[in-house]
View 1 (cartoon, rainbow, N blue to C red):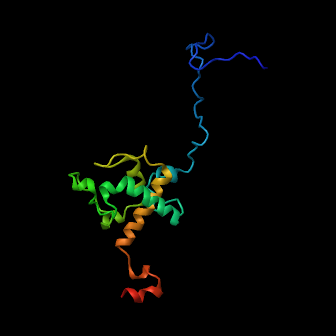
View 2: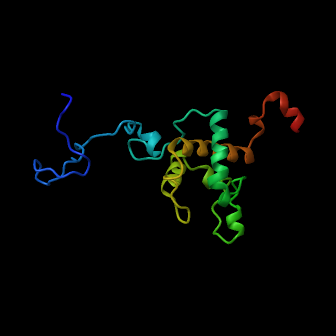
View 3: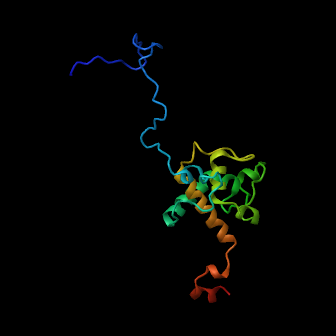
Length: 166
């Protein structure tokens, strides 16, 4: 047992027809940590192929802070920190992206934003290699907070604070 024959990586083998000692994985093999069985979380779409309406991630202040941080790094150069589509890249001549505060954009399901971050759209490139999946959902939560900040109703304010606003 302590002196078994073995092959080094990339070694030649007389045993296999293709002469390669390294064997391809068995079809259907999933590496540890890569089982993506939660379709909505990993794709932004439900089992029928429709974008999910609401994020599958519970929203809390920690998630919103992370979303704000990632948004300011990756999204604000074009979308601006306000989400109005007037970022520094637009001031330098890039085509302006839509404002997150437009009614049409506010109606998009969360899964649509996830898909756009993942695959890009029109002039926006894909960010799937730069932004991990958890951070994409955090950014979407922060975008929703930005939208809410510019389109809040009096009912969104706690009753005890409403008198100080009016």
